[in-house]
Image (cartoon, rainbow, N blue to C red):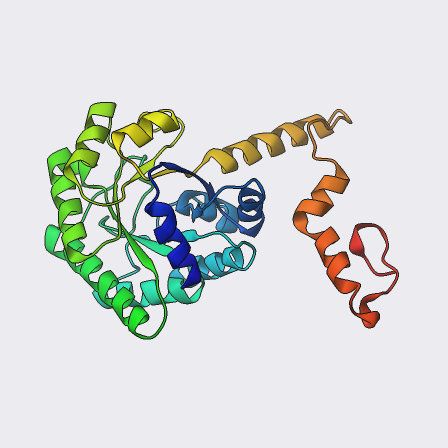
Length: 299
């Protein structure tokens, strides 16, 4: 509930929040350490990191919620979870929203793609009909209201991928109905130019999210331009994973020649992971004051 309230406060600000997307507890921890106000669990990056497979609906509900819980336990900033299509019919959507709230997410994204879903910037995606799309968001909002009645809370990020197959007008019409049904944040995926982005923000109420994929269909505009257009959040779903993968591949290739450059030094690595905080906290407890060797291993 606290994280949902934090997210509402952020969305009320007159700015476009830069939102680096995480894929595990460590990447989320680094985002928080660098002072970002919120993060999103990228389905693309999470599927790649957790199961080593593309984001094509292969991860189960249980795997995704488990990953979200690991992330929320590692950070104190709001996390938006990727609930995909809700993992079934409207009743499954209700369970998905409740599960993400219990995992500590500030918001959950529900989309109108046909299951199994696909990454929004890859070929072959399709959307369900309007009635089914609206039922998903209606069910998500019902679950949110039940959570509130019981003392919990979560925001609903409603996404449409209709631009790809049916054009921008259909995508905007769907998103407008999502807002009428009670969605908190709107996300029209993959507008293809700045004019389309401006039309999305001009035609739709409330907070909107832009999704910036390096090499994707949506223009990679500066944050000031995104704010001027009308976005409240700019998500960067693959930046950290692409940077990490490039660094790992570079290191692996260098190791063949006995070289390793560009590494974080061991002291900073330990500090960012939390060794220093652990040892400081453990000083309060006599039974924890045992001799530890390098890397925190007990001798």
